[in-house]
Length: 268
Image (cartoon, rainbow, N blue to C red):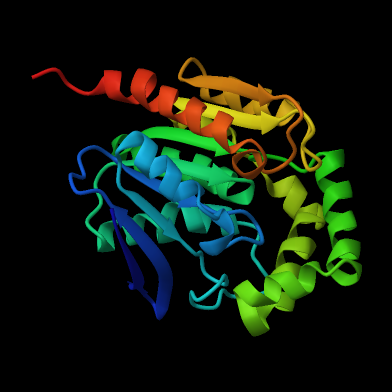
């Protein structure tokens, strides 16, 4: 496998940092990883590479505007920032890299954006996996974000994030914190049209002990997508299943690709 670090121009002065993982024989759709609210390429750790190796698929990991080494994002963050990422910037990135078919793998806020992108990209999306995605701000979401502010200031999380986001770290944290606790943003969230438009196989994963989301986040997403979606609840798992239960999540996704995605390929 080769690993290429890229800076990809997307127009309007926007450049995003990306990493492509290529197999010697890169057949099939590309795994595209969408990171969490405070994440970046490095914070996925080895999970993208391990999943690419296990499935035999190429992979793309990238940093959204405002994160890591990518361009700044306009602040304060607009209520429709998730829709912008899923309908404008991700499609532009795929076009710029000439990637036609994808399997989206999104964690937390990246999972929510992946839902929107799966609807917007239509037939280009051959499969969708979300982990800890949100379509509304439940009481655990609000409590978890408020508690994270205390931990950010008192438990060294700010110092850890500085290694990944540099001088923009405080602005990035504040943008995430403020928009999700904004009642106007919470009232604006309506994923129903996006979920209804998703036609690809989907696996919606959440830990039973997720400190940021109630189980209804999963059931609402699955009900919105319909028969294409499968719910998965992982016992003794919190908000980051791919880091807390990597072997189980790798196995689940490999089975999903083999049984749900591969079987949809045309038989020539």
